[in-house]
Image (cartoon, rainbow, N blue to C red; front, side):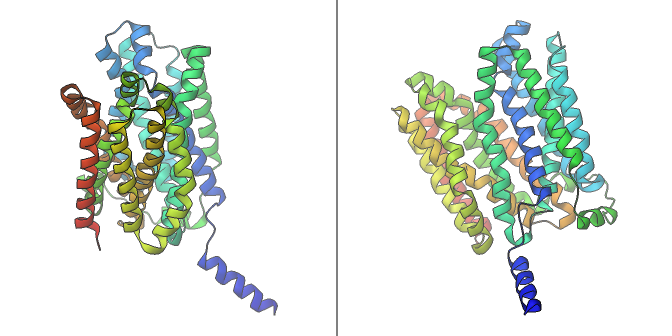
Amino acid sequence: MAITAATTADSKNNEHPPLFTPAFVLGWLVNFSQYLCFYFLVTVMALYAMQQFAVSEAAGGFAASAFVVGATVARLFAGWASDRFGKKQILLIFVGISTIASLLYIPVNSFGAFIAVRLIHGFSYSMASTAVMALVQTVIPAGRRAEGTGYFALGSTLATAVGPAVALFVVGSFSYDALFWLTLATNLIGLVLTIFFKKPAHLREADRNRPKVAWTPKSVIQPAVITIGFFMLMIGLSYAGIITYINGFAQERGLSAGAGLFFIAYAVAMLAMRSFLGRVQDKRGANPVMFFGLANFAIALAIMAVAGENWHIVIAGIFTGLGYGTLMPAAQAVAVSSVPAHQVGSGISTLFLFTDIGIGLGPILLGVLVSATGYSVMYGCLAVLIVFASVYYWLTHKH
């Protein structure tokens, strides 16, 4: 009887292997700390640069986007470096550099030095976030890939909701230096957690057998991830229309209260649905989840196009959480499943590169559209773009 019971227990464990292992939880916390640091600073850097260094609005905007420039450059090397030198090693090195960069915000006294710190911080953040994502993917059971990826993505979602609000409170109640010290403390916590991260035995064995491949264009753009990458470029461009212009849109229409609740609604909606959608994707494939996310994102953008009340913006936040908040982790699971185990880093980096391009191009292209037509037309056009992305996805991934 004891043997039968033990055998049954082992069978159940094999069918439903544990997801929330110590390695997964530590990786989640490290990722959360890195995204928090990003969102602590991204919302206030333009105004800080203008006030501290007496620069123009355009220069202040570059101070904010310099971080993204550094992060995009890092995408060219992050996946390859993680696969070539080891994910834990790359994570530890660049969380350390990110911590140093956080400290350097405090003493810088020139605009040029400030831009340099932003570039270094963005580069190290991108290297670390790619490495931790690839590392956690190796500890997620293959049969629970989408579910685990969804739970992992909640870290960045929560940071999106919490980070800007905390930053504005600290700057308003204390000072920019207090925000920089908070960012440094958060990075230090991430560094300590990284040090205590212990790789499972099978990962240590994989490190010993890791191919010593040289950097090549293929290590930057994994061919197997290109189609889902182009899809996420369109999704990222659409998301850029929200994160870049929601404040200006809300101020123009007197809907600032709704805009303040947008990302909270986004996070709550994603949190409510993520585990369910992850299990659906693991059992039935990506297509049902992807089309669910696309439908919700199109609805969110359509609501933004006609919004006239604060509650409209909150409802749009809910649909964005069910839309973009569903598509990003689902696409990550697709990308990971498309590449061999020893190329997970470059697969994830390829997906992030395409997404970053979409988010980076969005403010430029959509700024022209907003100036010519206004916010309603812009959001309406983005809803149409999501319909086009749905057709593209069906043609490239229907099987």
